[in-house]
Length: 363
Image (cartoon, rainbow, N blue to C red; front, side):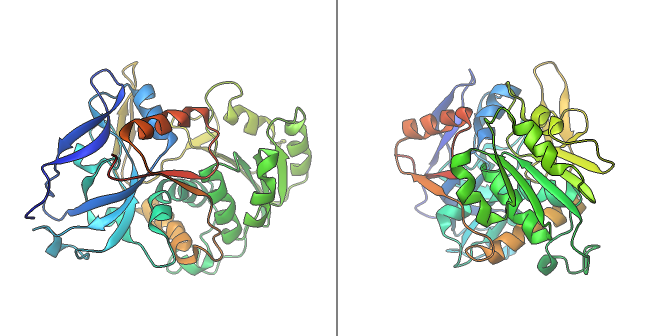
């Protein structure tokens, strides 16, 4: 570890909860951890929403990355070697150690948080893949109960399963999570997929697997979706991939668009689900805990069974990236820390198409 720097430039919420550039100490890997030089980190709405919603202060930001494994004394106990390009997701929650936060120059992670980036997956795309795809995979294959794609279902209850009967409804089809959900739904064998998104994105979404497309802002969108779902055989799986918390509230819109039906399952990307919905995390391989301003504590316990299922869905995406899984847009921000902070705040508008990743180091 000779000639390594003494600091790691990071995006953090300061003591007032304001997002700033801050130099953290260079992270020392604990036993069994990997030391990584971050090449790119993925920008997500949760970067800013968690700071505001949970009142996080003195907190390092960033939930996903792609980087190069560096030599360290703990590396020999892992399956990786120096020079490997890896990507992955990091632990979340108020108690996360700063050395794990992804929006910084150097991080340390546990080996089972990451995967080696294959040649078919560009590093900048890999940096922004983990959260959106694992969220969609967790929603479909755990909360909504869809079967895994056949190629990754070996040894599970889904091995040899027939194609599911029903319709998948994705509210927010042009979000990163929504586009992943459409493609994973198609891979699962769902033949009827309804996507609600801006009309200017419909031509992009149809080849992903959407069979019915509706415009968000159409005043008759609720009735049009409801009419399409009338007479659905099997299950209606509804997924709020948008997660809007101000009028219009996406959970309410989705629920009102589903006609009376005997088999309905609903999930949302928000951690505060409405009645009938299940809250979806990006990963179940961690114990996650957040404290709300009113003193309520949200706890999501580690669940290896659920984690195995959403990792299998994620593996299907990695294996098929650029083929059966069609890449979605990625924009790389190469700029200053100030530019990066501005990009994070833009996430509040919820109008990005595709993924934004930050190139490190921030200058």
